[in-house]
Image 1 (cartoon, helix red, strand yellow):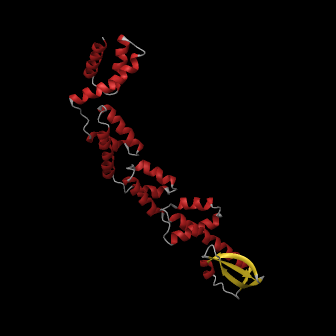
Image 2 (cartoon, rainbow, N blue to C red; image 1 turned 90 degrees about the horizontal axis):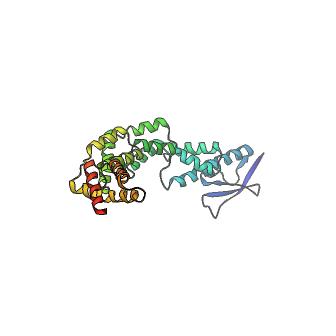
Image 3 (cartoon, rainbow, N blue to C red; image 1 turned 90 degrees about the vertical axis):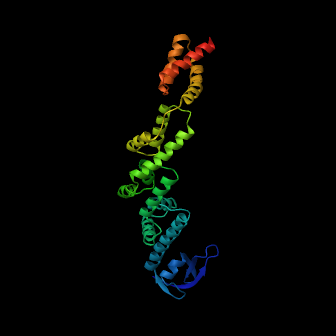
Length: 269
């Protein structure tokens, strides 16, 4: 069945959409791009099949426009855009067409997105390959593309960034023993996504030695906490053994521990 377009009006609330009237009655609204695509003008005759095609293409255009708005705030992966359109209740066929259009016009490119994400995570979060790979997985990036992008993150660059993190930790935690610092750095770099190979190289680069005055200050502060913790439960030999064991596990040398315990006994005696 064919019908004639008798009127076309622009919507007041959305200047990019038009109302189409067929045989003097409102029929549907469409995006300006679809109006131009089908060369819709007053007096033109269209059949039901064409109307269905227009409706489908208009839905694609609506999805495309919503995706563009979503992309205007920041770069997104294809998966993120797909999920957004799905949440907005667009059909799968419409979503796929909209995604293809976005990719064709250069608005959507997982390779460029992945490279940008890699650089951002390296510079702002100081993350290693394993952590960045998890970020890429969350964004729905193809595994093959993940590996291609991560391959550009050289071992040399990984070592430089990991070393910066370790040196900062040493500066901020200078009151910890070398053993405590090594453990802290190792745990931090594992969380950040660096391999054990990189971590080992970093630990070999860091100077962990302490001056005599530093040892005395550290064992005084940490030792007092340990002593007070066990003094309420134990006494005499058992107290000394508990304190000695705890401080040894924290990385204090035996001679420093013995000196500390002797001083505590003299003070408390």
